[in-house]
Image 1: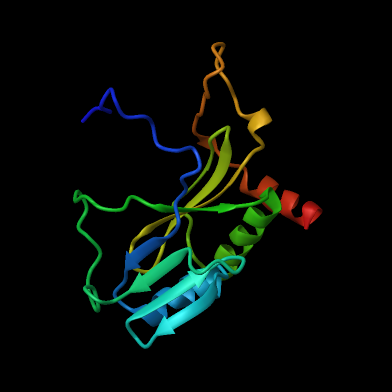
Image 2: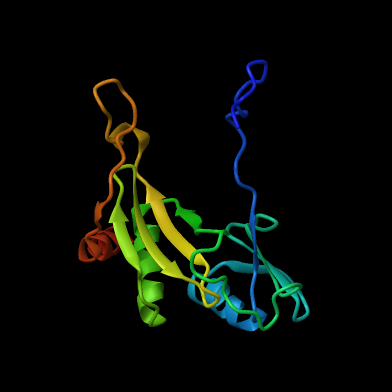
Length: 169
């Protein structure tokens, strides 16, 4: 599907408002997103749904069991959400997130330096992919000769990230 010639590109001010995930066990999901990652619990609707945020927003994340209570993660090779990415404001804040994940005994599935950002990859208790990242200042993004962005994937130095968090924090 191509952009019709008479239509313009999406407004540059559009942003992702929230992500809503189907989970099999609300309390288990809240233990991860609220207990480990530290999102604020804004509202809970019994054992069926909860809404979480960072910084007082109405919700960045919705969790529900409406169609998924006791369910299994989607089988490998099926379509669906690859991951949800949570963007931290600073490298020190990402280091704090890494400390929380380590303290909770959660294994990372990856850790990458993409030039424009640094990212940690893991799964929530329902197998949903989660990316925790921070963006470098745009002036530091790697660029090609024509000025376009030149992202890459390199191994992230986790010790360096943790040390930077201790210095900044």
